[in-house]
Image 1: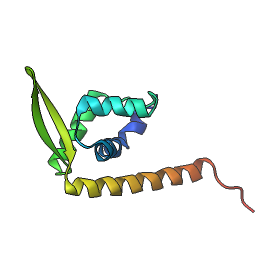
Image 2: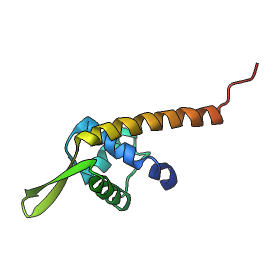
Image 3: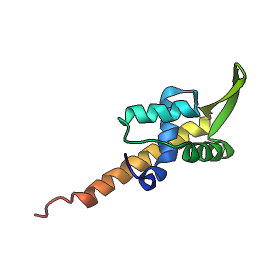
Image 4: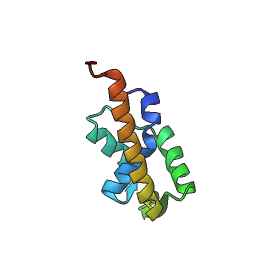
Length: 111
């Protein structure tokens, strides 16, 4: 499992990418999908997930929809049109960052 500090810097992008690929999702579903895809290396806690989702909602990047399941209420999250743009921008930025970090960690031999 990766450190909380590494995950913290990429959490928005991870969440947004899941919503882009899977459409409408609820919080626990997001955490389980990320855990599954990462073979358990990335575990998102509720304490990290929900503040991030609330921030994204306040910024207009995601919308929410409540659905009653028996006596429980489940909150689903969906990307807005601007959320799709933000997801693309953040994905490109993170990919570039990873490439830059790779260059730092594994520099090419000089000629």
